Image (cartoon, rainbow, N blue to C red; front, side, top):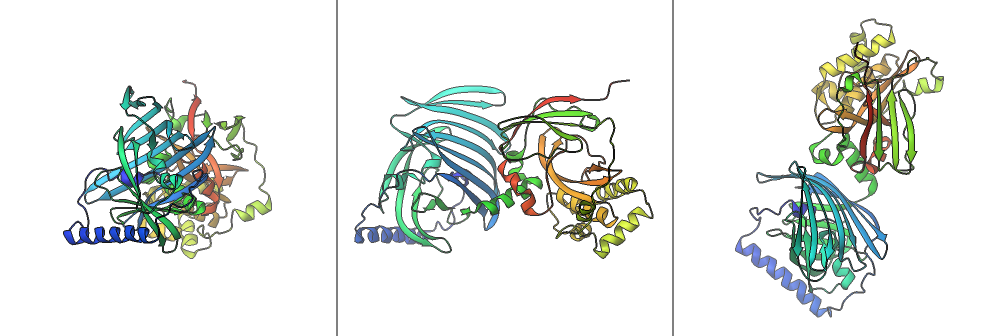
Length: 504
């Protein structure tokens, strides 16, 4: 597990519980722990022969409120391993605020010694890329920032370890309660190699988690960083500043729900992490007649829908090219009865039969029978009435009461009104272009009118929605959009072409 929550507190803060009595009690507890280790023989436990392979997800919590996530994957690479970490967090404590979105990849030997690394990070809005490798007299480091590149040598002798390996190290060496493991670690934020002490404190039982080995390290100054790991070396919990910031291992399904919902809501804590920057930028998205985009990092088993304006024009491995264009002619065809019924029914959070929804759509339409015009009226009303926020109102009725909501709230309310009016409508999610930023994850709707599915974006008041809307998934339930977790923060995109109407 990365030392992300510790990194965010690498600037000194006022310590909680730092009075002499607290320090005395803390020292006494540590002494008792060490004495117990001696009384029990302090024999080393069998060493693990390798780090825990596979992936782990973590929640990052400030004062019991979730404020970020981390995702770690360890896999075999040649005679060693690759440790990859994606993480994003936003913290504000005692007037001190830090935002970080970090993607890290380290190649290490069988003994976890650093070989090379690549890091893309955004700290408090400032982006930076670091690459490097271990050499005979230290670490060769290259930093790219604001279009400039600088290379340097971090001098050091002997093996150097990435911070991501510190939690695993004691078990790889044979965990001995009370033992201090002294090693050198790469601090990528400070761009230094530091002398680090990792202390094996002993074995504990964590409530609701079970048996764990407790360790401590001093990688970052002024930070009490305690870690609990299981017998395989998997991190179970990290605590910074006596529980002020707590990182907890969690199951993949819970992590996926958090990540997808937060990315769709465009919340600050994953904004930089999920943003897909592209070049060249789109000059006038509203006037596009054809858009072709190449994505890299697309899972080979993930299917992108092909219908309406959206077609796949090339696919090779994890590279996928999609083209979006309005057809010269759109031949309408009837919607099968089972599909019509499905897209008129209510769901847990799309509620066309609710009395307030039914009364509202009748008021907005005011007797209008043409469904194409009906779509325009409903879309325009939602866009004009509901203020955009990062908060998702779970129920359309709540959205109507607060007059606020994110893109999901807008799409859910519009879908409820449209279905109530007898217009078959889908709730869809995918990517949309945000001016001056790039592609972001977004939700909108599609309504079946005139024999075709029409993309409708009630957040931006577009009907039809512009061609930057790249649809990935249908459905408004958390499980429907959960597959987004596999690609958020991992996709890269390149604009192949952008076509506009000929100038008259």
